[in-house]
Amino acid sequence: MCDACLIESIKNSMLSRRALFAGAAATTAAVVASGLTTARPALAQAAGKVVDLTHAYDGEFPTFDGNPGILYEPAVKFDESGYQLWKLTIYEHTGTHIDAPLHFSADGASVADLPPERLVCPLCVLDITAKAAGDANAMVEPADIEAWVSANGAIPAGSCVAMHSGWAAKLGDPSFRNTADGKLAFPGFSKAATDMLAGMDVACIGVDTLSLDPGNSADFGVHFSWLPGGRFGIENLANLDQLPATGATVFIGAPKHKTGTGGPARVMAVL
Image (cartoon, rainbow, N blue to C red; front, side, top):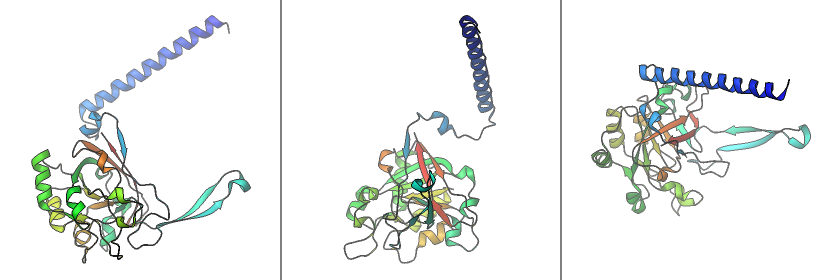
């Protein structure tokens, strides 16, 4: 084929592709306009900034019971086979992870049963860093929720409400998990607060600590009330300090193993 013919052929091909993409874009716009898509308005309005709310973790990452949350075992070695992979032993409630309803109920929904529309939702960030600086077991209380609503407007139904206590900055220091004498100590939600959020049809709550309940909880009141109600939680969130109180959409990459009580998750926020 001559050079001129080749150039003309490429030009025609590019024009055809442009027409195809333009048609696809027009079709997508029509679908959105007609309301046939389930995408939330917050996604369409996003500027495209992505904040990773997930800690990378290994066997050194702090856990509630103090035991390693993930174990690595070489299954295939590169120097022997030309490729490599690990055999992993993972405990569900380690790292940045989800607590599914089944975690604290005999027959609640497993992590595989969580409705997908609950995994993409508006994110509301409650900042209690000032309170937590003076009290390692500080809690989100109804007054904190009321103050947030007064400043930012109503909490949307189906949203994720996350506690920002500043605790993620302690990761790598023993104080992330416990006091100097070994007692568990970290902020969490109060049951009164989560009861209020349940009445608002909030889909999930999140914390930047090891547990939805504060470290000194004796009864796990939040776990026993929030999760059996069909809602879920996210523990060990990262980078909440990079987000505004409102305006972000959270994407919760929940694992989907059958009968799972929870599991490590990749959680990201889009602004």
